[in-house]
Length: 170
Image (cartoon, rainbow, N blue to C red; front, top):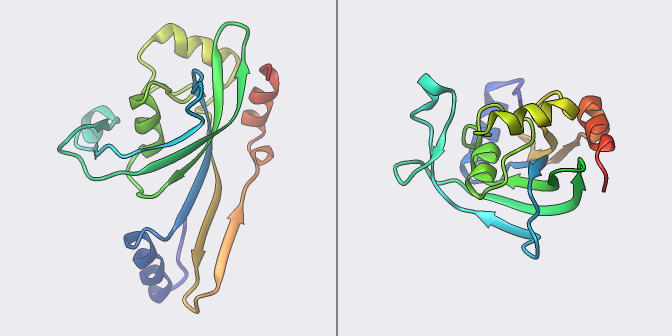
């Protein structure tokens, strides 16, 4: 969440969002291994029309353009399943963008009750991770004077996620 302290500040940030200059980085623990495909992007449109009734979005041709860039930081295991810790940057800012794109490419976010379709998988995730494993790690923008601002939030700022990651084996 980014809050402007003035109308001018609001307009400055809005212009950066439209120009796709606002930096939004996340850490996500997702299901599965990416194999040799350790970095990439997802450029599939996201339709948010089901959100009002289902609280989910979907990749669909009728959606708005959406761009997500990812890089695998490491692989982990709970002894049964393999997970990948990914650094994700959203170029566009669609509702549930990281969750929708990761699920779409076959790597849903751990403990994601909206986009993991198998209840047994979700229940297994919840045994070691109490909530959605998605953490905004950085936001960067320019002020009304053009000065750059970068705010970082390491995973240790979300102790429940940090502890969950420590429970897994790398």
